[in-house]
Amino acid sequence: MSPVFRFSPASYSWVAIHPEPKGIIQFIGGAFFGTFPTVFYRYFLQTLFEEGYTIIALPFRFSFRHWSTAIDLLKEQEILQGELTERAARLGYKNQIYQEKTSYFWLGHSLGCKYIALLEFLSGPKWQQIAEFCIEPSTYRQVEAILARADLKDASILGQPSLLVAPDISDTESAIPLRRVARLLDRVGLGVKPTRAQTKCFVERSGLFNLTALISFDKDTLAGSETDEFKSQTIQENSDVLLLLKQLKQRRFPLLSEELKGKHLEPVGVRVGEFIVDLNPLDKFIQPLKRRRLEGLTIELLDELRLRQSQLESDLADSGHGTLAIARSPEPVEASPPGLQQ
Image (cartoon, rainbow, N blue to C red; front, side, top):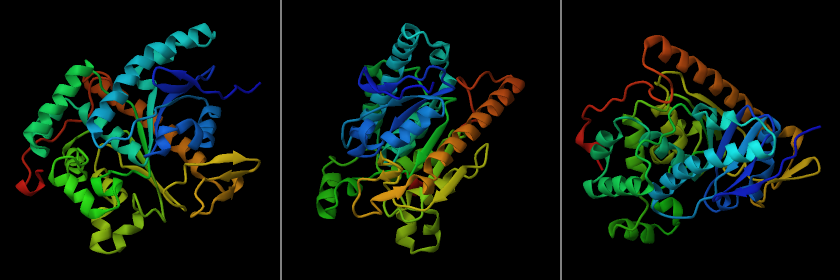
């Protein structure tokens, strides 16, 4: 008998507990759609549940203060680790897996990918040195204060693989289409923090992101696509997909990435019979399930990330550097040209 896919509330999230999980997926969606992940991403998440994963759907409030939202998500992981252990035990399921940090995966769509990138960056042992270079001192002090209030000084996502789907490293202009208003908010200090340029600086200077994969879409005009490399300079500079492909290609492992046909909202949709309705009348709106590759590719990349995780853990153990929960490759923190500093 197949396990029943059903979400129930836990802390500030929704969880679908698999009776025999091979891992736990923590999912963060895009702006607006990510506020109601169990509705808008239901088919996407159900397919992963049926593959054998416990699913945590992490809603987030819309805010320009992305540091606070990311840290709230990390705190939620700490809370849910104990909650899922207890619930699985009450249901008669195996529960030891929920106590193992490396059993957790991060899966993001759109803006959700930026929060995952910030959590990865904050997990590095030298993030303070990099942050002091990339952001202004007042913002750095604010981040430290947020972490202190959350009591997450030693919390991290080290050793937890991440899959980024159509990543949107959002700026104020991404959230507000009126450029004049967006620029005014930035000038008075009320815009998105960290900015896209600052987030780029974090990723570029961090030695982490070794267990990361990326899925993009060829007609995505928000996150960008691999083909942006052959377009105008302006498009190249604003393509988050192109940015991450370039930044992450020279890590411990070659970046796992693949581009599918489609637009930015491909993960969004509900199943109606043998079709997916993607809730976007400006897109294809409806698609036969047999033509849909996203879920199958997601499962393949998660499996590959699991293999890399095991290999990295074995390499660290052989070198005497401990486990994945403690270390990865070293982080470069040498000074870069002043033009990079924000």
